[in-house]
Image (cartoon, rainbow, N blue to C red; front, side, top):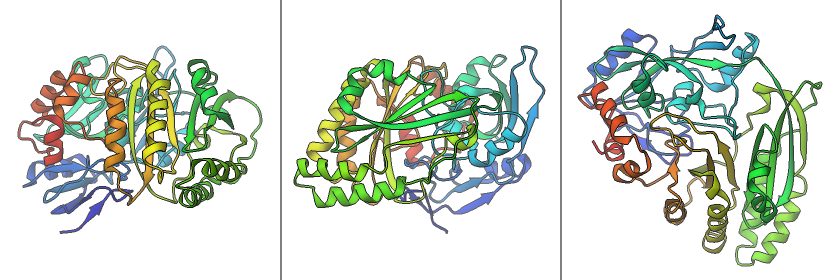
Length: 428
């Protein structure tokens, strides 16, 4: 029995077997022939144990990595058929070469397409939804081994139940995604006092095509990133100094833990060389950033947009007061509403607040403290990041929860995709 762990090491499992599947026939056999639970796994970039399976079968979709540009629709819209096993990083270069692009991306491209869709992974921008909001059609093999193809319009309810499926009703094999023509982004980064950012939160978060910011714990500064579409010539991206900056933040936190004023001074010095950034790059190279350095764990909650400033002020207060060893920045983004039943952005424009802590450091007390705050604003957790919510909590937060769970049960009547964690999460 081999050991599997996710990217940060927060989830560890010992599956009875790891099955590499290259086609739907092999996938069907793996699902129906397993004696224990079956879980698909992509890049292992989820921080929750959503993909972990002990004593069952861990599935890798090694053969599902195709990318095909489809004919334009009657209205001129672009589409592409994409294998669920390909990583976003591998996908985007191929799409660009075909004259296609994703309308938006997050800042990590290591995830597989299946993982990004299943957990409602997202970027930032009030006009852009999560990855599943780009879906037009979804193909998956359900718990009985049957191949199913569902379309946004033709199979509206089942589509809404499965578009954010968290690997529960079936294993996604490919997706048809709406794309756009390739574009170029001008990206800039600058520092701003955090209170100035929060006092004018709405307009600042919509000041450009994509806006996000990081709050540097203890600094009282927000590091703001803005992206605007442009046709200007390429301007070289400066060398990535994020990992060097994190090492300086870690050192500053350790040396000044008991003196907040001194910490603020030290952080100001550490940030001087990492604040300003400006470049122009093609879309698939502009969004991703380097995360291969100091590993971390993360919890991210999605709140109604209007609650963002107040909730963030409270999170900052509790972290700086009670968790002075936390030096990873908090990340704040906006995401458009959608109509997908298990999407954290269901029927509401959302502000996402992510809190990070160095991998291997105790996370439980920090998580409990921030979840207490997020609960007061009906915060919905990211499916792939750390949270403690169970089915009874989630039912209150998701208006279509019972319908989505019933759809899952019909697709997987024997519970083949349910590990103990997933049973508790779904109330099965």
